[in-house]
Amino acid sequence: MLNQEIKDKVLGFVKGKPHGCSSQDISKELGINRLTLTKYLSTLYSEGILGYK
Image (cartoon, rainbow, N blue to C red; front, top):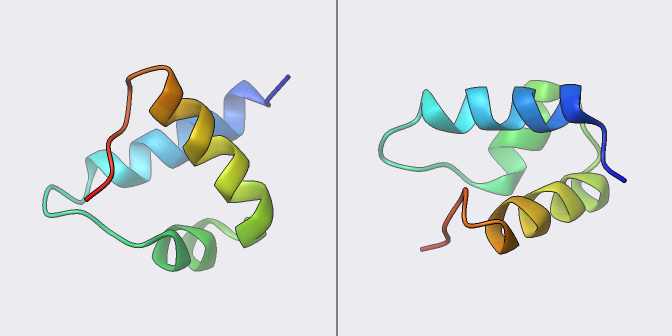
């Protein structure tokens, strides 16, 4: 199970970037390991909350 606090941080960051951002941007800004972040992004995508370009 994923940490809700981290999910909220990721969503908050992404919502502040209306033109999108890279996983590297998110990882660097939030201090989350890129591999860990990938798990969160994949989950948010599968839940229909985020999309990819």
